[in-house]
Length: 53
Image 1 (cartoon, helix red, strand yellow):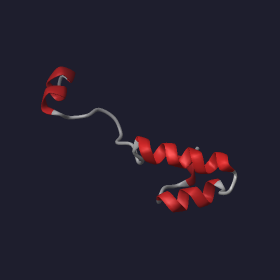
Image 2 (cartoon, rainbow, N blue to C red):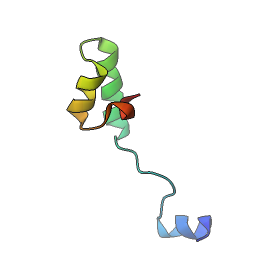
Image 3 (cartoon, one colour):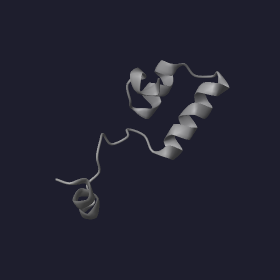
Image 4 (cartoon, one colour):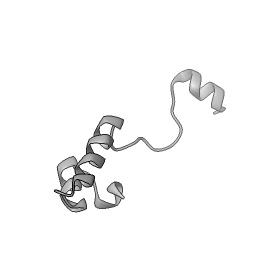
């Protein structure tokens, strides 16, 4: 399927992000506060630790 045809039909290319932009901003805020570890934040958001990195 050509890219222009796919875009016209509403098909996206690539993998769908696990977190929304708002969730990602909140996640970064929690990590930078120093109150939570990477593992704790991953558990809170229901994603793997590798997703956080």
